[in-house]
Image 1 (cartoon, rainbow, N blue to C red):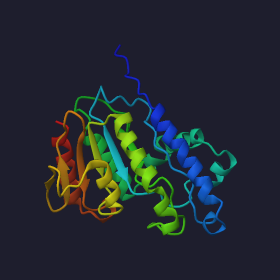
Image 2 (tube, rainbow, N blue to C red):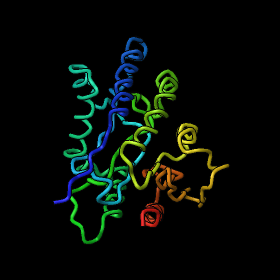
Image 3 (cartoon, helix red, strand yellow):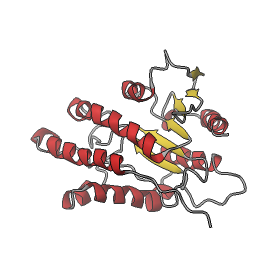
Length: 237
């Protein structure tokens, strides 16, 4: 029986603990307390093994709504947040018919070998650029958005290093694009290929392949999604 490769997430967990602290710092503001969502922290799904099958890190924008804020306020810890994410992946995401999760399931299936059975999103790790949402505005008010920048960049770099995906897919469009550029390099100066609906670059000895869609799945046509899936398949072949 093949042994699942273990993942050392100690550095990532230290960064995730900083998100709990940042939430507390922002929550101290009475102006932000009523609109600050609970922290979102990424976690690898049960059965995730990047050595066994083509894996993908799917990077979205930010959670919508409270993100189980009431539960978090009863137990403020990074452990609770990771458990919440894993529970959502296992129980809620399969029922979510929104554009993001529809594409996530399509992407996971596209990268799974045809002769291999799969129990859902075992080869996909979900994360977001912003780990703290704004309950009243999807675009985030500046007082919630700006303080996240440096930690968001640090955390995303660690997520790529920790989860060791074969492919990173940004479905963020131009939302917080300066943050993405800080992590992956400026596409205007780096060897990225560009099409109308997506940018991509092949893997190197140091970095996984990357695909950056130029819009969020909720604004994409079926033809666009299929084009993204074909490119993802090619980049992991």
